Each structure stands twice: as structure tokens, then as C-alpha cells.
Length: 206
Image (cartoon, rainbow, N blue to C red; front, side):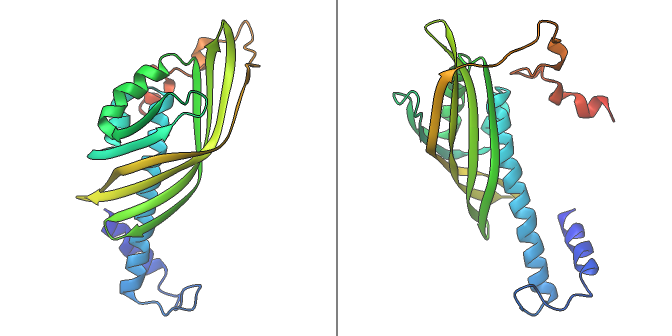
């Protein structure tokens, strides 16, 4: 399917004779660039799936983003006793257990910069993470800003994480300010599991 797509894009670009940088276009280098664009999109979706796996506490999805020997490395700036540098698959149950104590979470990923080199790639992506947790009976908002650094590898056409580390640039920890109206329906509130509407919305609306 990807080869068909590349062929179609090449046909659509036939009227263009040079790239933006002045490089002469040939079928070979155009196909290479199109394949790089597709690889970068595939990698970006793996990064997005990782964020979703945390917010929906989807252990299977999280595990699927790492190769079996892939590794995870980071330290939590709000709770620095929590530090991990080991196998990614082994990290999954630890992450799921840790997220059970959080009431709400949301991870936003942006600014992905990806460098592809054959079947290997490196990437940097900005992350904004929002967590509601309880301290001494008071809800607190832990808000973190940082960047994920990745090494990816492609096998049989599929990209997965070989190594992921996180650098935090700033954080806030403050009393929670969220207000939910008394009549606000649970139907429209996000769920931190597979009961979330995102898991069946597409199928329901086909």
C-alpha cells in the first residue's frame, strides 16, 4: 500500500523538476523522500500511542510501542525517588501501577523532530503532562513540561522504540482548581481505561 501511495505522489509531482533546495528531482530521490515522510508519520503515531497508553492506562498499547529489548529511562521531578532505567516491557506494569494513584492525567505531544537513517531513527518531541494526585487529603495538580528523546528501529516495516528518555524543563505542583458542574454527565467525562469513548467511537460511527 505504501509503495502504491509513493507511486501516486510521484505521478502528482511530475510537473516539478527541482526540490526547494535546488536539487534536481529524479524518480529515485523523490521516492526516497516520500518514504522518509511516511516513516516519520509512522514514528509520530508510535509517539502519540505511547501518550495515549498512559492516559487510558492501556498496558497492551504501551507494551506494543517498545521492541522486546527496548529500554526506558527517566526520573520523576515531583517524586524523584521514582527513577527507572531498564527494559521497556518491564516498565509497563510499574507505570500502570503508579498511574492507579492518579485521578486524572493528560499528555500532550508536540514539535516532533525526527531524523531517519535507513531502518533506524532518532527523535525529540515536546511533552506537556497534567496529573491530579492527592496530598494530605488535598487534590494537587502536577504539571510538567519537558521533552522525550527516542531511538527507533524498523523491523519488517514496523517502527518501535529501542530507547526512550525524558528531560524535564519545568514543573508546577499546586492545589487543583478544576470545577465539575453537579449535573455534568459521566457520559462526557474521559475514562482512564477501555471504557473511554475513544475505543468504540469510530466503530460505532462507520
